[in-house]
Length: 318
Image 1 (cartoon, rainbow, N blue to C red):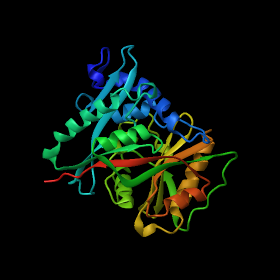
Image 2: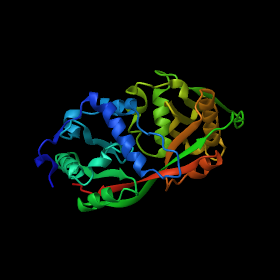
Image 3: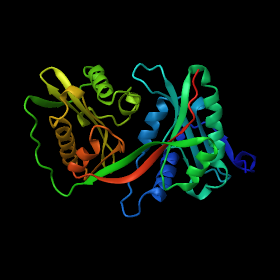
Image 4: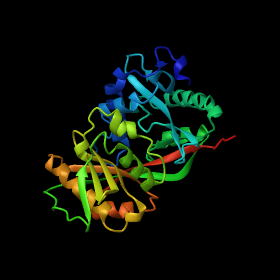
């Protein structure tokens, strides 16, 4: 059924004023997909959504669906990212907080939103776009069937959320010999931090604006920088959310790995969050991470929670 042909439903570009309602919708959806034995805490705040939206052309790159009673019941946003550090190979990404209200699944809303994404994608071929990707929770069988029907397939890339609950003050950390730490200084460290993250992950740091420039609650004291003399060797980018401390990025430059710098940065940040009154610290990490990140986080007491899998369309290039 085409939801747009159903009386009373409408679809239009998102407006900044829709962020609060969308945050509630995504929390409701995610809670239904979260492992029941784990405590669910919302991943996307209103500030998170507004920060991402400030870096988009909402009129061209987003759609929201409203039910006859005026409720927001669906959202999809599409952004451009890069595969390579040289920023020559582009791909289109459907934002991970896109979704449909649980009470309205099976009504054609997801199909209508994906039709918009496909149309948007076709218009990008002139820019050498390789493929379109999206993320879904493996517990969401309806979404999996819909994506498969619309020419998406799993590409063996999965991300898990990990978190630790703190019952007492973590121990004071001891830094490896020759390593010191300080917090981020805006206007001074920008280029070094961005370059360090890109070197550590061997890919572009695509969401710099979302964690820094456009984020309403950006706090440089949650960004921890590890130095050896005048060399920036590791970075942890954190954010203080209402219910938890979130670690957005943790990277160590290859030449400084296997010295305990990443582990110490993590423990330092966890202790800092505890001192701020936060008793839960969380992050997300790729299941196929090649640098031992899962083991590093497990040593800090973190446990695996929910999982999302990446689906992609077939690559298209000139």
